[in-house]
Length: 318
Image (cartoon, rainbow, N blue to C red):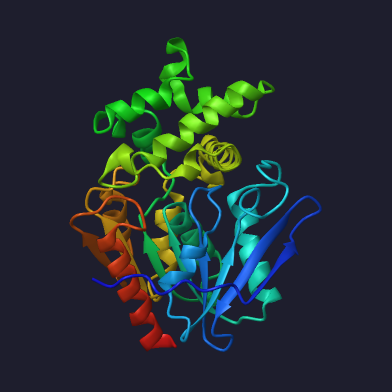
């Protein structure tokens, strides 16, 4: 199996003012004259990480990462105002123009796949191709499966820890119960809710389950932005005009756009049925189902296939 490229440092970085309120952090690494790629992190609210650079051959790719509004190094931290899908799509396009890039490959997993698709159906002419992992279309059914009932049957131990901050009489609508606490004035309740929300995802992203929980999900600063921004987007149904809108747009606008989809067979966070539906709507995309993998981009089989995808695009378009 292929393994990640060696760690590299960012060659350039900066902050882009995208509104009177928000500044977003961006960075560039790899070959300054290479094939441009924008890597879109998950969450929303997850922030980018140095490991995201390692999915691309730095001799071939000009690697761009951006922390989306309210998370990572972007400011103000954990801010919900002026923070929605279409603001992020505009930010991506502003960054492309700021960096003088004509077209680029778009790479994203989980929520990053949602945002990648939203950008691609809005600015199709700027997209060379899409490499997506852990497909999430932010439909009501997907959100209900993971945050209300469904995944709970596979991870009942983690689920009990997730719902612990919510009184029993409010558990019929966990999304809004969490939102009330994550946006309320009680700092202690906000912190408890944020960590419970973040750790629920952290305990379910890999086949190993709770034993593989990454430390960042328990860190106050990360958990606060991650939980608040995710819940904000999910309560507002992704800010899409209607449920299922993104799949319809993909079917209408991406027919000539090359794509590679990588999805774990046992992905509990974003079940395979969503990737399957996207593939049927977008025949030009190649779907690769990884037999022994869950949701995380760091599962060995997913790493291997994503690296093969970036190599493939490097040969085709580099």
